[in-house]
Each structure stands twice: as structure tokens, then as C-alpha cells.
Image 1: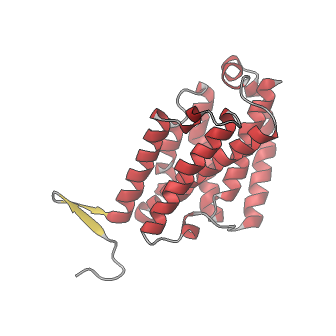
Image 2: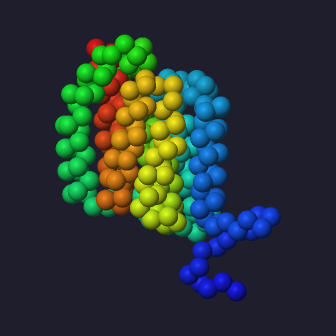
Length: 217
């Protein structure tokens, strides 16, 4: 019989897998595939595509992983749903926001950014919807997945969680997709340092709303 502190495993035709980590990786993959092939934004909710996308992402990227953690007997606070080290989080988020602002504004004027973002919805409701969208994404990648990988593989889990995050940007401007290699690592470090996904979510929302605002002129 296994010792109490040993990880639970599952034997799949002789392949012994850690149960928690296997479930988290499979759920993350399932959520991303469903979001790609069946975007709930196509429900055309009356508040517009940005808001319906935000609601869809909260359902898929936040609620599904959260329910999974609860079914596994895990504490969501151990996966970044907490205030964490707020002094560090706010200081780093504000500093990075100031640093990337001119870069984002310049990038928003490039032709491919104009083509992709100039037609995006503006206004407060759309901005709040994008906050919900990226906030849920931060929990999926830098909470649910990253902390699971860190517990299994150590700090390299921050790097491993960046790969699916990068792939979700395929189809967006190439420069943006390439930048997510560094941005994903930065968001991962911030979540690791503060033990919270909150500050990365705020920074992420600032960047996406800024690029939409700048592209729309």
C-alpha cells in the first residue's frame, strides 16, 4: 500500500501515470480543443461578441478547471486563486505596464495589428469582458496547469506551461505570437513569485485593451 504522502497513480496498460497531473493536462487540452472548435461566442449573446467570449472563457478556462480541482480534493488557493504577495505583484505589474506601453502603441500601428484589432469592440463593457477573458486564461495556464507542472517537475513547470499559451495565439499577428514566448514566461514568473494569477491577469488585460484602443485610433 502506498504511503500517505506518495502521489496517487493510475496504471494504463502498464503505463503508471500520476493521477492528478494526468487529469490536469488532459482537462487543459480538452478545454483548449473545445474552445477552438466550438467557440461559445458564436451563441451571439445580446451583449456582443467581446462579452460573450469573456463569458465563454470564464466557463471553460476558469469554472471547468476549478471544478476539476475540487473533485481532486485540491485547494484552489494553491493554484493561484489568492491575493498572494500583493506588494510585489502590484509593483511589478505597474512597472511592466509602463515599460510595454510605448511598445504596444507602436505595434498597434503595424498593418497586421490594424487588420486584426482595429475592428475589435471598444467601450467599457468590452474592456471588462477582455479582463474576464484573460483573467480566466491566466488561471488556466498560470494557475491550474503551471502549478500542477511545478509540483511534478519543479521550476521548469513555468516553461512547460508557456507552450500551450503560445499556441493559443496562432492566427494572431506574428509579432504578437512570437512575443508570447517571453510574455508567457514573464506572466509565469509573476504568478510563481507572487503565488497568485491576479497580477498577471491585470497586466494582461491592460495590454490587450491598450492594443485594441491604439489600433482603433
